[in-house]
Length: 78
Image (cartoon, rainbow, N blue to C red; front, side):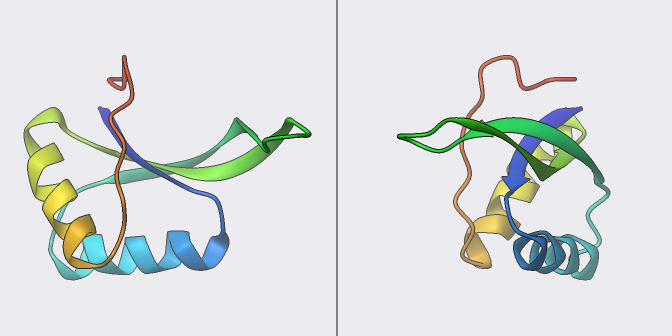
């Protein structure tokens, strides 16, 4: 599965879930830890969104349409 987004806030995760569900996209979401902060780095928990590799372009289009920014992660397949 390809990681397409890390939601750092619950409201953001719920909004993306609604966008994916409304569009009929199959996705998986799980909580996981990431490093955040600029000056004071700390471990935080976010909602990690995954899609099948062939669905990644569709997921990015949905995210862009709903105002989400996506990032390319090296080694994003899981």
